[in-house]
Length: 506
Ligand code: GAP
Image (cartoon, rainbow, N blue to C red; front, side):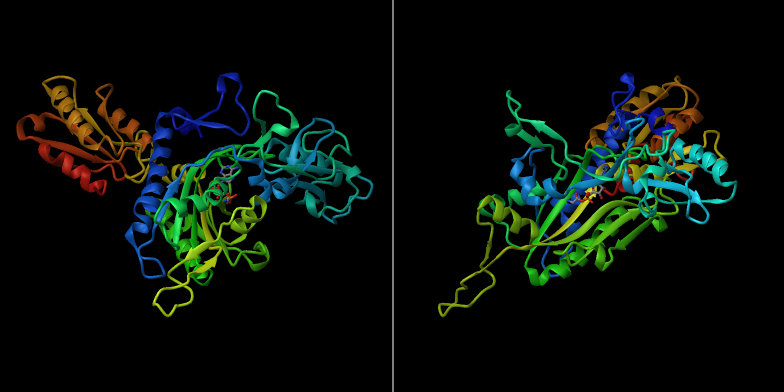
């Protein structure tokens, strides 16, 4: 977090006003990193889906984009089930007015589990309340004679519980449902009739426009519709940096297919999404694909998997990065029912073959496979994975970001600010910027020692630095320094662009 702040990746939102809980801003490096992640998703999911591979039907995967609004008709959220069911159970503190997610609260109880007429001490993991309540519990039940259990498994009565930041027993209310959607009002009157919601997911915008996309483009099932944008959830306890924010960005695809092919497509997307996260730098055993158990699945789903990453704050456990869900035809069914619009697809490649050789067409509500990724969690995972401490270096911190994602692609340094080196560096910098600006920034830096300049670029995650030195002037070669190994090699001044292009996979 310190490096993110210091180098302009991520700042607290409204920091000069004391911050606002659950909201984060991106600085110059962070916003470019996030843009690179968004574009990588767009390129590999929409422009050239699955790197040009064929799907389980043997044909190339086809996807189109939409961009739908944050505010939709409130009936959208009625149909999707978010008004009735998008709730988290929470508990309130009567003393401090604090609010906690019920499933995040733990209690310290005596080893036997039965506190008798003594109080039990509630806390939230990794918060100051954890150590404070532990001390009090040990004073009450004896050092080493306590254990912690989830609040949900603590038997009544609630009158015995001391809330995480409170003093008195009975300070915690029983759990109540709390709807996570942000409410707003449309128009000047702002009456209850004007209530609208900020979308809690981008997915519903896709279902609502499904018919328009089918009617106005030449897509044919199977095909996908992608939507990228901001979503809002009034999380009860935002925490773990940007991991659980109240405003965040999603990149979601709804892939529509015939019911008979849906399980094959589900497996295809699940495996591709895992491979994709690996391809942009989340390699190794920090990434897992967790298939949900049968009893975790919604009634309409034939499978859900999460791509999970071992974040430093979840380790040794994992936190969700993306969910890949088989949603059946639940959403289209719901929207058809609530809106009254006919959303069936007429599949002219299936259905009864008529005597004239044409097909009658099979009408059905397509089934849907949904890979739903979070871009803020993606950025956080990329930074966590890239963050490396190499004590053999004078400035040990570096970010080993994948070149495709790195916000700065390369830096050009004159070894010293004299002898014509700045001029050569400036020319190379301009040349590289002209060629690579679509991919990201090329920096030029001539301040401070060369070691400090390398260290600055290491922290920013810049994969390559090109240094103009005495040999450049005589032999027309430059030093290339590789961020990860720290090793240097020489390439021709006129070959620097091609060298970088090859490293960026262009
Ligand atoms: N349409 C399905 C859907 O929204 P989800 O699992 O609730 O599924 C998808 O969200 C992804 O959005 C998650 O895997 C996560 O990366 C991201 N996400 C969800 N809630 C978030 C939050 N409060 N803060 C940051 N990212 C979040």
